[in-house]
Length: 200
Image 1 (cartoon, rainbow, N blue to C red):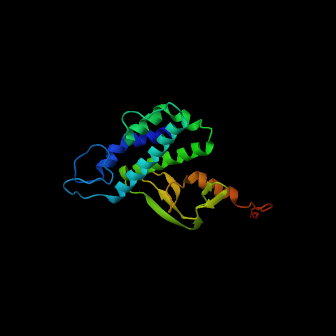
Image 2 (cartoon, rainbow, N blue to C red; image 1 turned 135 degrees about the vertical axis):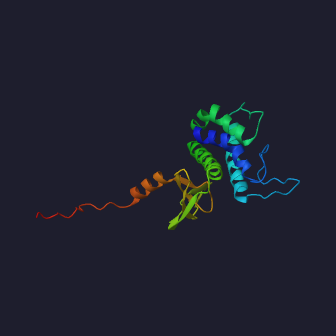
């Protein structure tokens, strides 16, 4: 989580520069912002920045809500908040009494890092996973709902693979964990043996 938060902090400016490829560098947070002279806007970069910003802010605001007396730093841009959490708040996130929240925070931060990586390292490759659906559960009161969205396998240019829901990007699992869980869920055949190889 620390590495992902620092990645967001370090590459945020680079990602914002990709918003308007013909412009020369910029300032503050420019996702989906209007400028006086219209410049070509890379919509996929704008969307990625918006998702990353929302993910980081969700975690930061929950931290403040859960810890009386904790206040956000004076600089409340997304990269500053990411750096603040990476340096000072990880123990609070991991040590939350609500372990479901700790897990959700982990995935939100991973999602933010994935978004920033995708726009600073090139386009990810996506492969459909026919017949595979998202089984993410949401609990509201006594009711539990299952997502059911289609799954895709996304691979970043740096080789990181993630199984992700097409309907909700926060429903994501690293490929190695997903494939291990899939193998574990399949029934094992007992008594099956390899055929003998006859001697010459």
